[in-house]
Amino acid sequence: QVQLVESGGGLVQAGGSLRLSCAASGRLFSDYATGWFRQAPGKEREFVAAITRSGNTTYYADSVKGRFTISRDHAKNTQDLQMNNLKPEDTAVYYCAAEKNDDYSYTSLSRYGYWGQGTQVTVSS
Image (cartoon, rainbow, N blue to C red; front, side, top):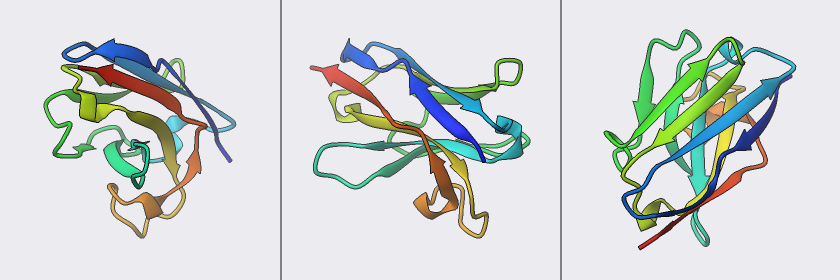
């Protein structure tokens, strides 16, 4: 079983950048497909980005495509989310996730069964 801990959230102005990091313990990131989700106040948790076990394929929500990049650092056993050109609508708690049920698509919440505690990202206009 894997434990996940996010870091790197904060307050940034619109157009700025942030880099989120997720550290794994107990297992290697490469043992799982993993991803990032976010949840804004009063809204459901939504898919942001995912990467396959091999790391060869990535997936992005349309709303972040071209602005966000998911990556892994195998030496550190971490997963990062580079977020550029941030918009106020990107404001949310961001969660790192690892898969538990590969019957679902990479973009589906149901695929992921291991979650970090979340990190707040606030983008001011």
